[in-house]
Amino acid sequence: MCGCRPHSILRVPLFTNQSHAPILRVQTEAARPKVKVGGVLAFNDYYIFEWGFLAKKGRWGVYGVVHAVNEFIIRYKGDWELIYYTFSAGGGDGGDLGLRRVR
View 1 (cartoon, rainbow, N blue to C red):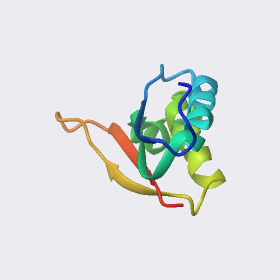
View 2: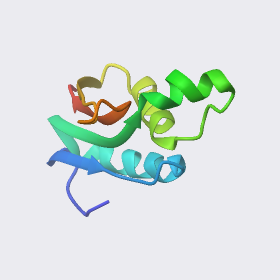
View 3: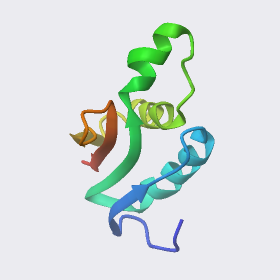
View 4: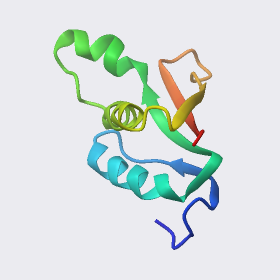
């Protein structure tokens, strides 16, 4: 993560390949202390397809973004709030998710 001071960044977009949850976890943990109160972590490719379809077929864990984001939300409950979730324009099953730092 950049050499920015803690609590100095307003928005951090996070992108990774779906199968690389460990990379996203490292990126998110590196970004977390840099984001100031009111700032946003923006995650790409948060697919509801993962838990709405694949999990029912015993294939939970195919897409890493869902897992990394869910773990982050649980770990830092109370420090972050969900501010948006977007669906793809064609009526697809996923999009982006934004978390705002509240403390």
